[in-house]
Amino acid sequence: MTTSPPHRPDDLYRRPVAEAHVDTRRAERFLAQLCRHAEAMGGQARHLHGGDGEPRPEVVKAEYAGNEGKITFSRGACTLRSTSDTLWVHVEAEDADQLARLQGILAADLERFGRRDDLKVTWQGQEGAADVVVRRSRGTTIALVVAVAVAVVAHLVFGSAALAAWRWTSVVADILLGLVILKIVVVTIFARRHRRPMPG
Image 1: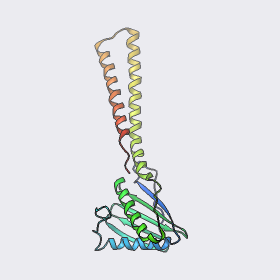
Image 2 (image 1 turned 60 degrees about the vertical axis):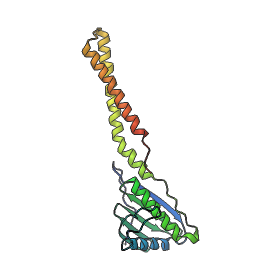
Image 3 (image 1 turned 45 degrees about the vertical axis):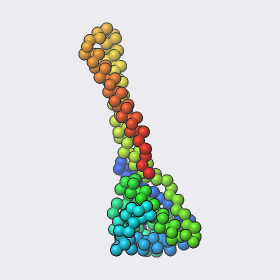
């Protein structure tokens, strides 16, 4: 079996991902052990609970050969690769919550297998979870900036014309008031979106 790190295109809706590089001289052994364990979880033991009391994610398929392996979950996947002194773990999921759940279970299993070696799994930050939020909000941010810019320009144009002609009619006043309200609403929405805590 030939398994390579999943392609992560630089697109708007990239799935959240996380990686861990585990230092161990028995990386290939732990890779095989984790895949065998996941395969067992996909059978009659599939509905056993994780350490937090929640049902473990369903394992659809687990396979490995030599220094490479892959575990496919119903809502995510884990790709594994071993070298002489490192176990490389790459996880992706449908959303940040599922990613965190898979990270927790995989880390707990590996650390249990490597207890005698004092094995520790340290994730390289949940970059995917943050990245997906940033990418999904980028289009919204641009749209909000454009809307504010249009409102400001229109405000200045109408305001300058009104002042030059000294014609403060009710129509112009209503337009100016509407533009000011639009700016306030847009800025408020923008601020609220950026105050939301980031998943993970």
